[in-house]
Image: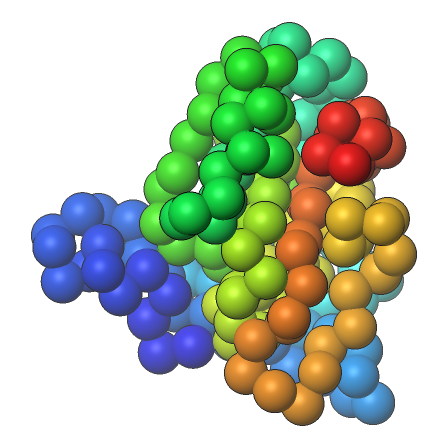
Length: 175
C-alpha cells in the first residue's frame, strides 16, 4: 500500500506507513512496514521471526482483558460489539493505520488490533499480519479461523489480531 493511514498523513497526524508484503501461493513470505512519520522499520520472513530495526520483537504477555490495550474498529452505525468490548478492556486506541497497529501488536506496544468493519483492505493488513504472527501473535476471523486472502481488495471478514495469550477470550467476548 503506498500509504496506509492516508487520512493521518494528509491531516498531519504522525502515524502512517508504507506497507509491502510478498506472497507465494496465497501465503505471506516477507513483510516490510516503514513508519513514514518516524524512523522505525518492521520486517518479517515466514518462519524466521519479526524485527524492529533489525532487533527481534515479540508480543506482550498480557492475559487479562481488564489490563489490555486494544485498537478496536467497529461499524459506524452498529458499534454494539466494539462498545461492549470497550467496557471490558483497560485502554482503547484508534490510531488510524492498520499496518502499524498490527506491528504495534507484534512488538507489544498494544495487546491487539480488532477490525469489525469487514472492509479492511488486503494491502493494508497483509504485511502487518505476517509481522504480528512471526512475533508470536494470533490473527483470525471472529470464528477463530485463519484469514484467507481473496483476490478482491478487501479481506471481507472481521479480523482479530492479539498477542495470542488472550485471543480466545477476545473472540468469546465478541461473539
